[in-house]
Image (spheres, helix red, strand yellow):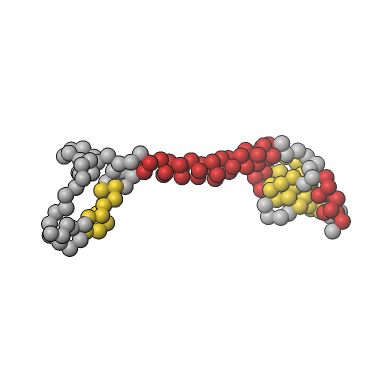
Length: 140
């Protein structure tokens, strides 16, 4: 007599999934300890099935979210320390010297010969130019 073959999988939440079953009509005998759970109880799954998704979540947190928080903190600190006389580059690529700073805006002097100034949101500052960058900018 040919025994039917049943291939099942228990996922991380303890749910049994039937993957394949042979064509014969007879029911297979199940080894001890692998049968269905008593009625009203969830089948017991492997704890490793739950550890893997948690490990992936921690990797996402440490590799993506925490570095972004660090960058945001550095940016907020840079904007709070913005002072008059500093050379900056805006997110639009405009280079200028800060002539006035308020709580939420700055005034940039973009052309000192013509006296051209622009009023911009303080958050529009992308970076503060270092002294060596200022010299390279003046040469070009």
